[in-house]
Image 1 (tube, rainbow, N blue to C red):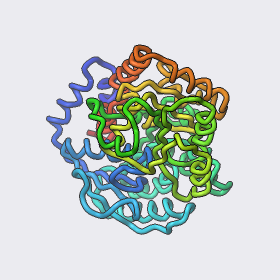
Image 2 (image 1 turned 90 degrees about the vertical axis):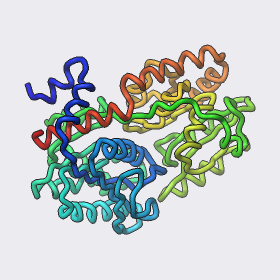
Image 3 (image 1 turned 135 degrees about the vertical axis):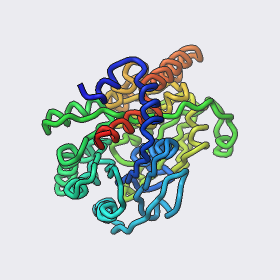
Image 4 (image 1 turned 30 degrees about the horizontal axis):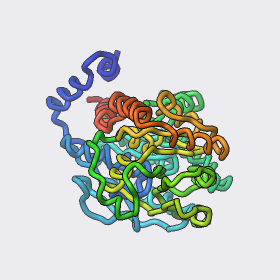
Length: 391
């Protein structure tokens, strides 16, 4: 049995991985392609890249994150090199043109690993593979299920999924559910390495007060303003609930201005839309909300849900399989896209006492600690890199 599989099948594998790093002493040069940029303000892929990248740097590796304007600036961010390359800034060409530029730039970068993130960027993963580079693709979500894409764009996204799975040194999925589906469709093993969270202590409630909020007196949702996040259903349901609690939806849109305008038009005075928030203030909002709600119609493996659980907050989720994989055993659940079901679930969550909410939150944090920390994610990814390099 290969040493990699032995490592993950016996007790104490994390300690063994640490000893392996200490004795191996190989500094890897790693390129990350597919992120908008750093810091991670705009989505789950950016959060994933930032969290694993900073930990790889801490372990002595060199990490270059390819990015584009206006999301990032060239330079160094928490130890990672940020390389800005151009793009054609339209909905259909922004990611593709930047990724193609990053792909050709990476051929001359003396990288040990070229790591693509998401199925759109992975359409170009065959190029560094053809030049003999170790190439990894992480499948974050089946993005072709998003309604914003037309038939040709969906075809290209499916092609990216196929290329990332079949034409790379290794394919990774952030979800067990997706990994199984990819293996079935493409006949190749796919590694499950999930998204994660950092286990912080509960921060003080200070900056959030400037948003007009009271600790424990608001419901939180976080995500990009796209139809598949289901925020329109959340607002419709919340408006039916008689409560003086606030609803805070953190996020915004790019190339989806019509949907963002719809969200703003439908929100009543109890709904707060503060735009993109990240870092300490976002952690403060997570840690001090009454509960977290994720009304998505489509997901990969939702980082925002894991982060809310890491702060011991009770969670309310739609019944899609991706949400259930993370929190089905500890969450309150409603039927996806069903405003009546969500209204009832919101009412039930608001009617819980502190002990009930505390018990739900404690179980969620314990699950994150067991399965979804960024340190654990980085352990597995680093081991995969070394395996692909034959180390």
